[in-house]
Length: 384
Ligand SMILES: *Cc1c(COP(=O)(O)O)cnc(C)c1O
Image (cartoon, rainbow, N blue to C red; front, side):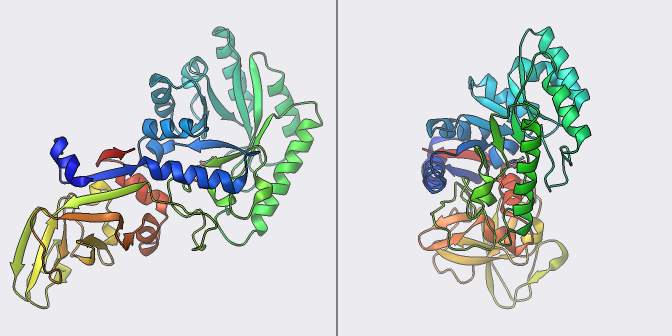
């Protein structure tokens, strides 16, 4: 695909992202088949769809029956509305009160964990002559946002929110902190806590039509966390929802690939140093290729020492430290290497693959961070 792109479009740099929307569709179908059709899904498209492009992802979600989106910022929500989507949008984090106007106007559903913010939202909704839907967010063990205890005071406060004019509680919302781990102990506690909260709220006559707790990490072995809705993020983008589980009971395909081209190629003698700090010095006569991609594109500098790319279906190591906008690779062992050869930074080619999970693991982070990082500056091309 890369070659066609370069013919058709004016690529400003020889480094780009390819997004395979078919693979996204495949992943959604696999996950739906696994969890069954009783469970609803909210597609999480925060951080520009984990670096994949929020609107393109939203379109595929909708086509596959997911018409609820989770975002992190008002801009993302507005972007979705401006593109003409009328589907549900949930704001996953807390936002300042001054954005209430847009929240109400655009029918964005915020998560709420204080009477004060609910009251302000109620006033704005009344001004606009609308009803604002909200999720009550509870902290069952993430330690991030939400009511932490279903004590009398809290239940009373939730009741006061329920009684506010022009406010409708859509449901109960909480997030898991260890769902992606094999050890279930704490997750089960979170589920129990969630149920306890639900029971106490409902016993006050407050309806909670949509209960949502689990994320991708919960898909595999936390069925009890499904409730009405799973909030699906990383797994639909094709990364493993559980770091330690290698053999998933369904097949996920990577949606994002990162590619580049060799823009400079040189033969150098032994003892030649490459890059900042001279951390790489050739031990033999070598061929070094330069690629126009660097840490400002999300190609993390800490990856330099262990990093690999794929050229002509062969795995080759990085040489020296990744620069801001460029990096070098040692292509000495590739016989037929040429200027302009395509380079796979992340993705699959024939039988070779370098996955976001692999890069993440080798530098002590998670696939999410790798995807978001690449998504920030590189141009994206979509494969339907
Ligand atoms: C990011 C996020 C999700 C999605 O998590 P994944 O692990 O990517 O599935 C779900 N819920 C909330 C509140 C989030 O912030």
